[in-house]
Amino acid sequence: MLLPIFSEQSRQTLCPSDSQTPNRNMMENTAVITSTLANEEFDRNVPRICGVCGDKATGFHFNAMTCEGCKGFFRRSMKRKASFTCPFNGSCTITKDNRRHCQACRLKRCVDIGMMKEFILTDEEVQRKKDLIQRRKDEEAQREAQREAQRPRLSEDQSQVIATLVEAHHKTYDDSYSDFNRFRPPVREGPVTRSASRAASLHSLSDASSDSFSHSPESVDTKLMNFSNLLMMYQDQGGSPDSNDDDGSKLSMLPHLADLVSYSIQKVIGFAKMIPGFRELTAEDQIALLKSSAIEVIMLRSNQSFNLEDMSWSCGGPDFKYCVNDVTKAGHTLELLEPLVKFQVGLKKLNLHEEEHVLLMAICLLSPDRPGVQDHGRIEALQDRLSETLQAYIRLHHPGGRLVYARMIQKLADLRSLNEEHSKQYRSLSFQPEHSMQLTPLVLEVFGSEFTRVSPI
Image (cartoon, rainbow, N blue to C red; front, side, top):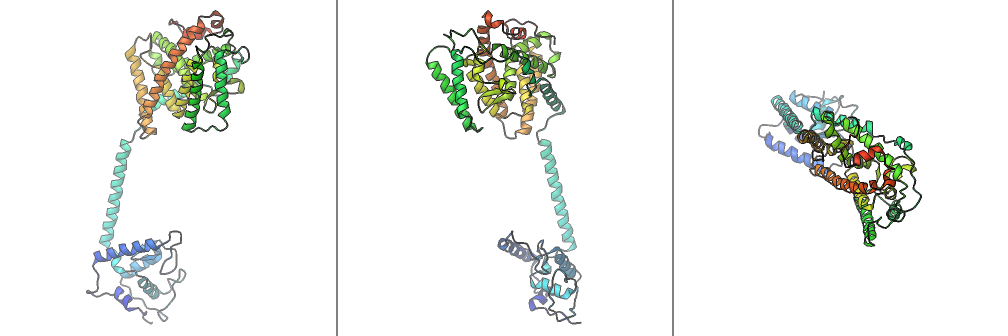
């Protein structure tokens, strides 16, 4: 058998003398530099090739780019201080398929491409490295456990409250709007009041720009500004929108919208009954809360059908698509409708989750400062429970959104102003017998000034 023919450098690498053995720290530094340079020169889009056998390389091992097979071969050979001989002339070509045929030439090739035994860790060093890796894994697992413990989460009670409210909403809000067919039919023809005429212009403004309208905040704000400017133009022309209407006695949409509001009140009552703690209140407090908050909850709920593209409420088919013009034909003026549309746009832009929406409705309904309320403390405790649940949900789903809760609560303040204007316009409408007779008994009870029983609760 012939000994493999090694270069001088190869022999020195395989069998270095004491004087030639490099300092380990120096070799480690050299490895880092060599690996860094090689990585910088290496194109990540080009497959890595083992410098020994041409197989797919897995990285730099012992100072050279090699596959796992040649890496293991070199380590075993150095640790065993193996001495191989070549059966030929010591110049075999090493490939992936024949690399096991001549260990001598394979080892020589390892040395020729720069693999160095000084980079092979001892058993103790290998164990220390494994221990270090395990320690780091344990430390990271501990840090992750701490982060998990600090991560916002809902309590079991809060999760149950949300689930109950979502179920209550689903049971009392039919998004197919199939019941609308049972209302007195909408009548959009007939005498046009000044408010209706102006509202029609506003609706035309929406239609004219709907084709190019996008849902970006800038587009919504621009459209809303146009809406407000047109309203101001009408107001500058003098007087209240309906102050001099000769044909104001005929409100063609009043019967239909009165039925719609009456239906909505029934659904709000059904929703309220399922709010945790509401049924435990006295009948007087339940009635007081419902009478004073019903229109606000209806306005909140109507946001689900509000369409940003044309500032209308779409409740199924074309007969049940309501624009500002339609509502003016039920006796309401733009003093209510302009802030109402602004409110709907602002609420829509918050992109509330369904869970946030139902919590906001429940918080709105359980307000201890409503007129006629007696047990303020108990109602406040129920509202605080809901507010804490909403804040916990926001912390969980809106990290860093510290203003989200404040924006939601501001919407409740906006609703109070809308409620006040609605009450003023309702009183004006109800004082006219030809109009009040179109209203349902439930609407008259809920929006009336005295706290009569709304329904058996």
